[in-house]
Length: 333
Image (cartoon, rainbow, N blue to C red; front, side, top):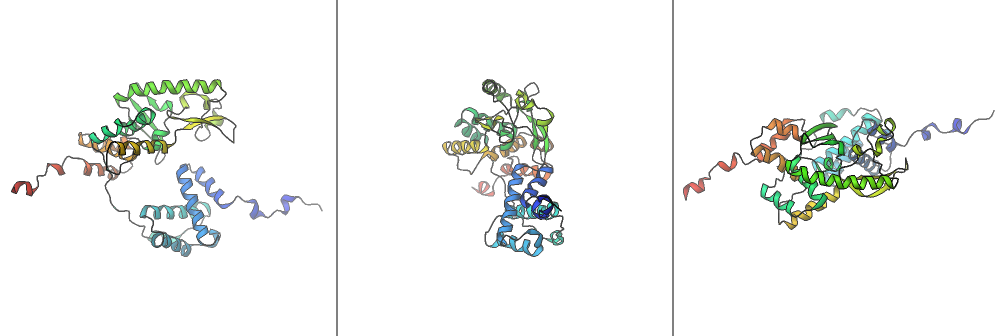
């Protein structure tokens, strides 16, 4: 009797490779691309550390040994160690369907309680004065709207409402949408910037390009949406690329490292010694709102925090209590 190659094939070899299964499950659950890269990286390191053994043949002992290695030999931070543990739990629970019983009693490393770096209004002005063009506008939005760096980079035309002076931040941390304010001072510069982006988009269309990546299955549901102005990036990249899967000529959004570098150069040029970066502008947004008397619940909503305790740190940072205290040394002189 004649048999087909498929019938003779090893069923284990026909299954997707482990890391591909991890990627598929992460995408099915709509985790971010950053989480995907981090989890796949930690799972790969875990496998290599144990001599390329398949995780199916390992368990609690090997996980503990790997985490101990990270803490004692690699001396990674508590947050990094927790991320590695989360990646391994995802692998065993979601992909391999195994429960790791001891994890309920496992004491996760405690992150040190540190206050974030906050720039004063004068320092923010000094930093922004050393920037220009697109990166200036992006940095101004980080401070003026409380955006995260990646949220700013991923803004689309439809997310900005000039009439309401509002930005709708889509699919932010925790896969939530939230509204935030557009500073009145940025309405003009933002409109001028979008006019330039519109001109570039129209040139791309004439050159058989002008496509943009769409989230989830929208490309199949709305085939023409990838060349719709509303879906274009507010801050598009300077180069066009060809998507391997579709053959479309697209622009990605400006990479976040471009903004990150520009902020660091401006910080040094402004003579600011604090180790401030893009996220410091978001911290400054929240702290300065609290100092101006806005209630903490409003600030929480603008930042998109789930837990009010996360937002409460800005109350501690605000200059509304500590600096009213007169030092006893001043009283004695």
